[in-house]
Length: 246
Image 1: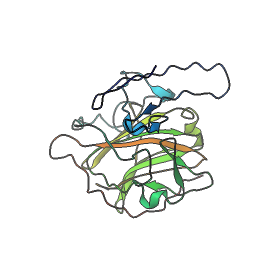
Image 2 (image 1 turned 90 degrees about the vertical axis):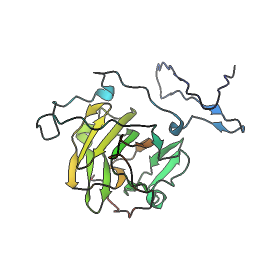
Image 3 (image 1 turned 45 degrees about the horizontal axis):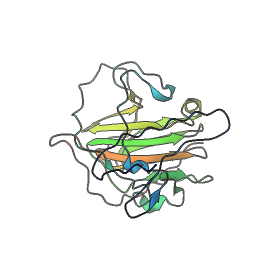
Image 4 (image 1 turned 120 degrees about the horizontal axis):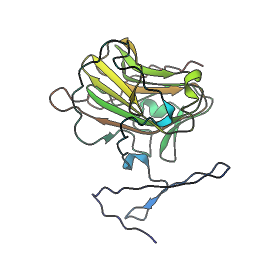
């Protein structure tokens, strides 16, 4: 029996699936007031629930406390404010420089890597202070995500083949928190090591994979509270053409 939803309200949706063998999967769809079906519901229309403290999805071990260099713990970053703004609309590649340069396509409401290509995706939107959130699913060959990518460098996480096995086949959440000269990253709620290249204070989000598959289900942004928050005006960013190491 159809369940009618009221616009402007948030609804909790849960799908339970038991797999006894094979390669099945569940999906949830809905019909819009204009009669258009969205099957499945694109991630741009969804928001996740808060991960309980101490729970690590995807089997990612929690690193020692402190910053990525092993030093003392840093003061907390400013609190974020407002709703997450969807950068990827779930339908087009308008958010990417060059529409993905023939290396990425939209499939089932997600940005999907085109096998046989090796051209990094780069957002047109440039980000300064605030949080950038990526929901993604990798294979086991390697991938990277970098923020504030531009002429002054970037900040990125890199997973090679030896580190990707436990991530394959699962959906993960990566959040970059950027404030001034400081950038932190959390994967599934747990701190991960960042590689700093230069001292960029503003730039695009860039990503690529070394294997045959990287699925980006959502890209979001929200500012910090107060005058430190904000993002650059949305405009095209020059592509660096970075390729992933194989």
